[in-house]
Length: 560
Image (cartoon, rainbow, N blue to C red; front, side, top):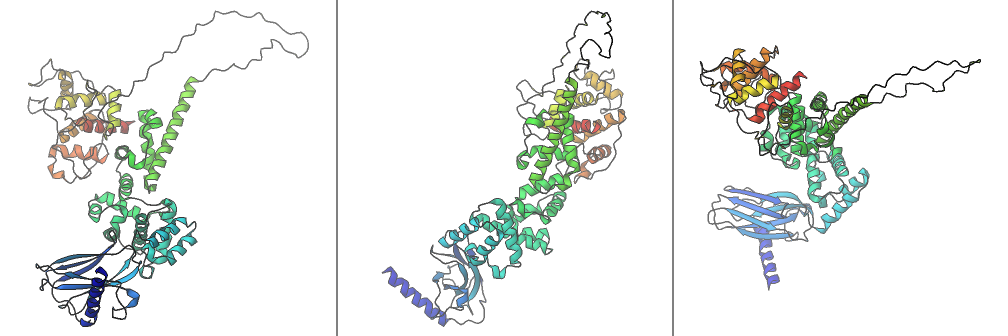
């Protein structure tokens, strides 16, 4: 009974082919035909149509067959009804045995002046033909074999070679990617095809902006996320995209952004912070040999990497450079260690007691001296690196550990450091003085600084040197210090020590920085000692323990 009904419907639809003229256009409403490869279905969308309830006949016809007719029947025909609101969202699911190929979809209605048409290359991912073609791709060992499969099975792989802009270039790039990746799924094959199409656009001089508009998804992102990149990172990202080596296989958006951020770093300190915080992207091991290096040599690893950063193209380049610099620094430390612990040797005598030049052997009474007692070397135990429970993924981890070893800062009894806690003015004064080696004894005081307070002498010392100032005779020791005020105190401390730093740096929120702090913020930022969020400085925000440790740690490194 079902088969008879289908034959009846097909007859009606075939009659409709001859009944509807193929001239003019659909004057009212919007009609869209699309193909959803993900679900293997043709979709029809009608909106704002003036004939609600009207039936729309859909024919799916092999493109090579031409216009459907009673002698050239569609492979699929269906009828969809426009709703009473003048809208229609219809789906025609393709059967599993549907043959891959190029098809033209015709949408017809009695009020249309002519059919609405759209041509698609239809490739069903789970069809036996597609599975077979993909297997042949994965078994291809050479570029020649790969291209042969692509040429003969292109429709089964979703490739419309007649309409590709540069089919040879596309197939070359696809082979490079797939050869690097090994066996691929159909989704990965399709992604390689879109990346190859993107490469053709780039080779033709299209902007990366236009490429990302069309193919952002192939790189694991969206066009909106691309537009959200900071300008400097975006420029470096565009340069990396323009020079991609496809023999590296797939490169994801977040990986390219990570490399672009490293390449665009404005100092080795900020580069180091970013790499350590994103060690998983670069697959860098920060334990082992790196963790065993001295603080100075850890800094040298990144100083040397910074010099070569323009050569980084993919995350693997960053990893290789890191591993190589760690290896060099480790070898240097081992060499210094062996020099310090080397034995004295025998001193070179033969011990024979005589000479054989002829004649008698001369003899000299030995001089007996009292043995010099050996004094065992004094072993100085290294200061262990503190282990805090809450800084393992914090950007300031290395600075916090370094300042802890020096005794400048410490953690809490529960084993935490609390890097995101804010810092008081009194705490900031002591940390800055201890870190930069400024004496902490003084007599000058403020009305609100008790002589018995733990911070009294350090505040007095810095005040006498003009490094800290209050509001009249009020210091407000327990108030949280702002980021701009901390910058001012640090700069005054450096000037007191004879360290001159100059420069300007324009943050997006520069107008929010107080006039008295602008010079200090600009000098510290331009020399890479302090950062904002990459755009803003947030001068009125309270500075955190981790942020203050990072600024001071960078300054100490810069002086090494």
